[in-house]
Length: 475
Image 1 (cartoon, rainbow, N blue to C red):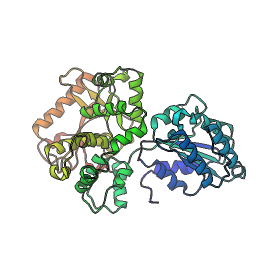
Image 2 (spheres, rainbow, N blue to C red; image 1 turned 135 degrees about the vertical axis):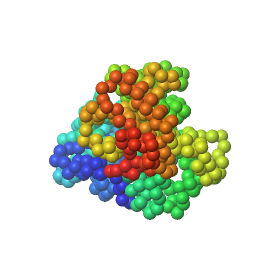
Image 3 (tube, rainbow, N blue to C red; image 1 turned 180 degrees about the vertical axis):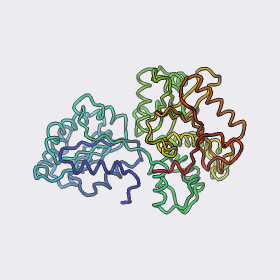
């Protein structure tokens, strides 16, 4: 197995659970391919008393076959294959009883738990019984469950109103890598790429470890993109549909939301989405949006209006793989070596500029650190004018407890960004509209976030602060 990149906080929490003097019940969740299973296997190695992986898209009988096989793998006698989950977990309890009562640390790992709920088999109820009636009675039990179907994990485990209500001792969402972690991963595989190349890699693949593992260090980024998306094999072209099929029972409803948000890069309110999708603005739509937020596909940006109307939140597509796929791959025909033939064209440059804004939103902590305000209480939000037409929008507002707001303007370029008079005037107009409509009695500072910095010029001295690409790589 390889070396773990990043995940320092998660590793610390997992090791603390392993060394705890009380029973621990840990739930990990996050989108597919993000490295959940790898993390658990790396931390615990051969320490498992029992480990089973649910069969993705498997029938209920397939799940019981996998359970039976796992029991044999760990040396437990199985007289018959279980026919329901209650029977299976009673068998597991009896198999583990001697080991647990010996005082030895007992690590139990159920991977892809949502898959085990095939045909509505109520695996969550059986897990609750297993924990409540037996496992929770022993201080040396560490019970870990994991799932990619985040909505299932949230509904049936984290926010359970049944037997698992308030039973989880460690809730651990696993998110994609940051830019810094992506760079560290590529360095570990001997990629000799600049930070601009790492940034462009992030624009295409996001911080998803599995996608990054498909890159070859002997190829340039352009060659890698063409091989994975535009070659005859097109390995990554099938990933988009496969990803949503494995996460949701009705994937088309979720994909429609993703497509709508891709067309509106500034984001949409729930009401706007309802109209675009021609769907009722009801609890079903709200649940689907929450599911996508939990899986790191979309971001929910709270608008400032004193947060009195949650429905006014702006939803944005923030999964970089989906953004790339829907912009360039989701076409009837694919041109071989498309990326090599179109790199540096206006279409790709425009996509890079819009995607860089999303990357900055995903690295707010690093931006605050660069501005030396990480120790100050802040509120970060988006703002959209309700007066101007077309509506003025500012994607990043950082409102600080020291009575200052950073009005952030994001600009992507290959070199230093030259701030022209026209662009400076536009920024000022947006700032003034924000101050006038919100009546905020804070000093408003213009912060420009670029890749290589703002070039020296007449207007560069009129901005109060700037953040560069290197700052986004901070730990």
